Image 1: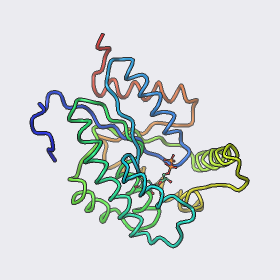
Image 2: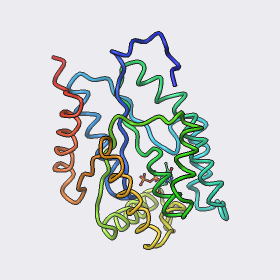
Image 3: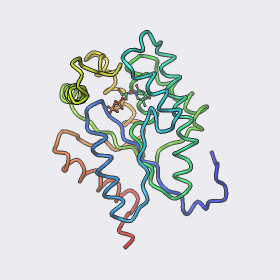
Length: 233
Ligand code: TYD
């Protein structure tokens, strides 16, 4: 999909996605990587899905709000792709075309893992919709943060309880996904690992059970090697 035909391919940036179960520390790692890449002189855009655009953030609210009840799995998948199609058009493609490194918290692998495996819609529909609605855009690199199920789900819960306490509310504010059970997250994790086995050239699985600094060091090394990045001085 070429929206910016005048920009030379030589200056094309990179599109890097972060994936993993809720509570694997993706957002912390994205912030750390963004800081490190900026220190190397790179221009970095940090964004997320669902969301990342004005329209996308509205869609995000509908999808994640625990007050949204009885959303059918198909409607949920369609909303993920609606947000994504807009995001590609407004943020990802322009950023990459301008030579930036776009770091995105979740992309189509999330739909394959959560809707395809977790909600049992299968990966065929997801890949087909990705081809039609997203021009089959593939990240240059995907970091899959992997941790054991109990640790990541527990972390996500603690994070949300803390967020709610800060907001002065008493009830827990889990999003619609965090209310799912262990079996659901087990399917999501297996879905992710199956993607990693299939997409060996794109997906790198990083063990997220160490300290945030250890995980960051591993990720930075992967990124530097893959794109031969050194300080622009
Ligand atoms: P968020 O609070 O951003 O979770 P996290 O910080 O763990 O990324 O919520 C995003 C939720 O949306 C998360 O539970 C995964 C889910 N999701 C899908 O089910 N399918 C998708 O395609 C995407 C992008 C997210």
